[in-house]
Image 1 (spheres, rainbow, N blue to C red):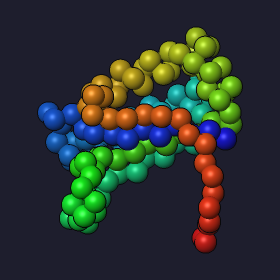
Image 2: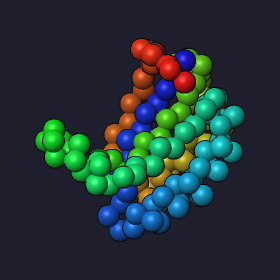
Image 3: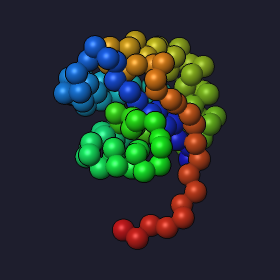
Length: 124
């Protein structure tokens, strides 16, 4: 499997409360509805929490400020991602989501990349 990881920062004109509400309640269902067209298998939003604890990690390591959250999207293979992007219905779904993301995400301060996972341990 392959996974897209999208590290998000909210637009400056969007409050944190509105950012998280829109992302979860408006954008999330749109992604769910587009999943089949995109050939996506799984979608997870991780919203940043514990601001004071995050700030302690940032300060102790001299890091850039924490992202507002991350999105992860899984596919069976890179070929599935490419096929979805090449199909009219998949391209339309991805274009719709990109347009919607512009409502709450600061693209210039966010990052996106494809990954493969390497499980080191799972004690659950």
